[in-house]
Length: 229
Image (cartoon, rainbow, N blue to C red; front, top):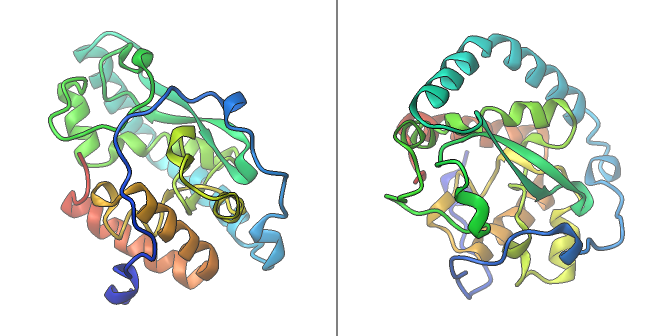
């Protein structure tokens, strides 16, 4: 992918501050339903491709799922999976799946951003976060049609507080993704407004070619363990 395209400067200012209230879909009403970007553009290949690829990946990676699950259970008490409410297509809330990387009950104080050397992260949690293996259970979300392989990351409610209604409508017109333009353009080093700007850029430019380019960049960054906490 053209590196200049991936590092395109954003047009907004105002960096986000860490922290925020616990997500409650009732307190973050979605804008009126909009027609999916996939329908508007004839982007019909995306959902069938996501369904087939996620299904194959879940079968192929079953042994890895088992190993990670055992390591989590043996090293800290609590469930294997972490579930959290996020906003999906047209801002419909859904439960996102991740391998649990923090101590059980860490989310009871409310949703908040994580940082390097976060005391809540377990020993095995540091490894799976560094290698992005904690994201693998989102293949289940893709298979169920709640997410896509590539797209804007699914937001927690408080992350959209400064977004305009038009920005929210536009970015919610595509399914959220496991990886996306923002993730290969800076990820955790970006301000929240910069992430939104990259999401909007993706919606404007999304295509099969663009998704493949982002996927290649994602694989490179995962191998190099770039942009993770």
